[in-house]
Image 1 (cartoon, one colour):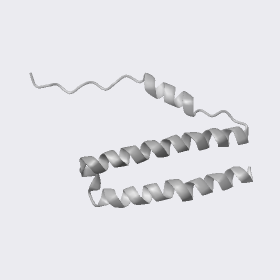
Image 2 (cartoon, helix red, strand yellow; image 1 turned 120 degrees about the vertical axis):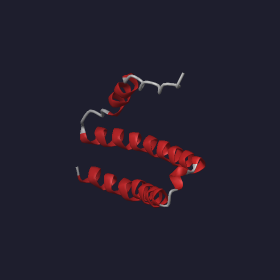
Image 3 (spheres, helix red, strand yellow; image 1 turned 60 degrees about the vertical axis):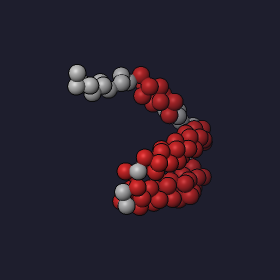
Image 4 (cartoon, helix red, strand yellow; image 1 turned 90 degrees about the horizontal axis):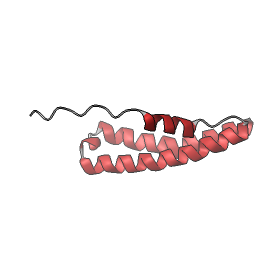
Length: 89
């Protein structure tokens, strides 16, 4: 269990913390109002989410528990799309 915690702390400090620090600062400065910056944020977030899935699978294997990441992804994909806004016609 100690190794799991060490891996989690390393991942938090080396991957998640720099991402959140960068984008928190930029969001306060209004960068997410810019379409190009918003696309950069989404691309970096998607890459981080991919890494997070790998780490959650690895930690679940090490802990001997079920990784529910894929189940959650499947459930999210089954959620209905929100209603479209009326076009004003």
